[in-house]
Image (cartoon, rainbow, N blue to C red; front, side):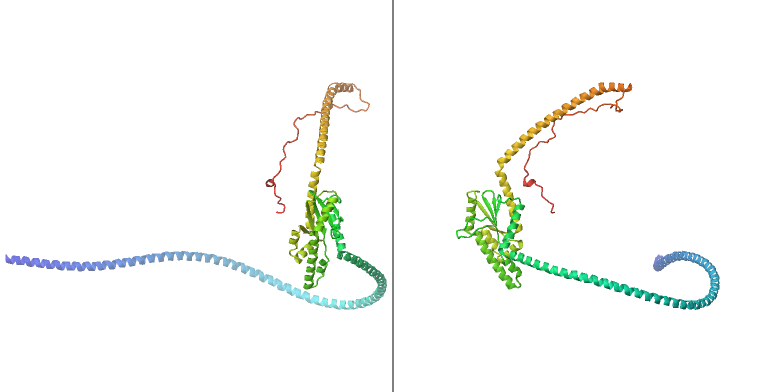
Length: 486
């Protein structure tokens, strides 16, 4: 029993050892198997990559092969074309060689001809030289004779021209001397005239006279009537100091108003123009300012205003003067500018004295307003006459309308009577006359009878062609602005 157990135990031990050995060997085999499997897997992967590379190389090789085949085909076509061109070039070369041979032959012939031509040329030159020498001798003799004859003719003609020109110049010189003498006389006369004009313009009285003429023309140009709307150089009553007060113009405005225009001139304007340096110009400006201030004080003086009012009352135009507008008239706009430069406060001083300094442009504007005021005043004064004239016009218009109405009725009656007469002639008289013509009776004038008389009809219209309406004043807001300057 014990031996059996031992044997069994031994067998079991041996079996266990064998199993252990088998397990160890199986583990080693598994390890080796895994290692081999890994190696095989790596090899498979490596070979697969190599296969892919090989396939790609094969594809690329096929592509390159196809490209190479195409290139070869193109090269073959090019070679074929080159061979064709070579053949053509060889043919061209052959033809060129033939043409070259022909050209050489022609050159040889040309050279031969040139040699013959040179010989003929030399002979012709020799003959031409001989002929030219002979012709030159003959021609030179003829030219010398002609030149001598022409020189004599030119000399004779030149002498005649010189003689004629000398006579003409002598006459022109005489005329020029006479013209210079006449011009000298005219210059002397013009200098005298210019001196007279200069003296007149430099004299205050002369300047005032020409200014008065310009002022009167300006007043007349605006439709003002002398001795009715204005007075020129009206001598007024002497002032309390015994001085004479004579304004250049007095314009009578509506509402017992007066526009007094007094022209002022100063010799210092000329001195200002003649000034050669700054000191002289400054002195001239100072003298001008003093002179014009004195004129301003004279216009603003009480004696002047009183004399104007007294003269207005004595002339019978009214009892009192409601307003006096005084204008200091200067000869030109440049004078105003120089006066402002000489005395910057002159305009303010004039405004304080109710005096307006004005040049030709400003005076024209003032006279324009005065003319409009006079027209309005004249219309107001003649309002009754205007109303009476309008009534007479309306009465005459009413009489004319009635006469026109009677004329229209007469025209209508005449048209109706003519229509009846034409109807009677066309329906009764004309058919009978035409029947007589058909029977052979004709007028002595041998003219055909009219077929029928035209009838006319006058239609009376009760609706007049007059659009009645009411006039409406246009306010400033409804006026259309003048945009012509834009």
